[in-house]
Length: 441
Ligand code: GDP
Ligand code: MG
Image (cartoon, rainbow, N blue to C red; front, side, top):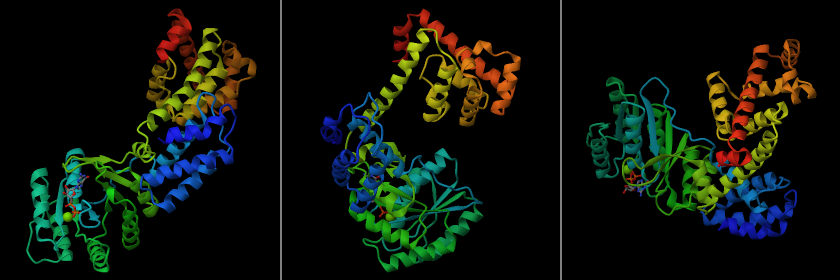
């Protein structure tokens, strides 16, 4: 696996402080092989590797993970970021009907995906959806959508023989308006290859009413070929997103990275089977693991991250056990929270903190609050930070002024510190470090 290969490259590195350029280049050769094996297009792999190299060179290697693990984590995180951070859904917030147009080659899964999305919109978002097939090339295509409509209990536009796609689109739009549908899904015809006639047809349909979403449906199993398809389509129409089908096959996910790179558009869904509920929101983390070709990459990354946190927590616990939890420690905790993505990341870090996080959340806490609390601590003298009980009313006013906040805010922070200290004392009674380690899992 990639992790083993990288382990080999980095074995001789153990114990050194930072990753050098030569080390990173050696590792990137292995990453490149993994990407190409996962069907990532060559130019995409190249550009990705340049990016990661830049980030990895000079990165500090945390004491508790190996350089190989550190690089895998950087590669994984960068992959997930490049794949699109958070999952993005459909943007249908317009005066109804919102038009969703599905485009792609024949056999890519357009018709099936049209029905899957319609079903999802109906069930999850309580939308009233109308589906219309504009595929007049294949006689069975309109019938296929009608049957899918029956199965999903989603309305379909009645078929009128002999109508051209643009006329069907107009009729569908009018029906959607008259009958109060929220969403109109247009399933267009595909060809076996991209050609001028197909593109012209797509454009004239899109001209009937500018679609809210134009989704390109691509078969993830077609690998490199999918890149050319995406390139042609994104040149001809304003795509808003991509749906990757057949991710249930032996696709290794490389197409996802290529699609994102070529179209610059988010992958909105993945098809994971023939059944009509086999549609998932796109999960960049999971696909990143898949592209690296390592079932264990996510757990490896989690382990690396957890070890780093565990080390911090243990250091903290040692201080606590000696009854030395002061404002400097609280500040370190606040910084940790910010790094870990705010309040949510905090839960489970230290005993007693979960409750505090919940409290803070109720009080409208956000990352800004963490920053303000840090400012309060920074406005204290070193002596005050080490001995918060020194803080009388006068000192509190000075600190509040210095931090640009109120005395209430200063009191809130002191209360937080107090509650943490209390929680720590309880833990000491429960068996000290051992009990704490147990609680931290
Ligand atoms: P279209 O020509 O683009 O409209 O493609 P269809 O929607 O007719 O799909 C072609 C075939 O692919 C059908 O047999 C579908 O059941 C199948 N299909 C579509 N999406 C998926 C998917 O995500 N996974 C699997 N395994 N099959 C799919
Ligand atoms: Mg079809």
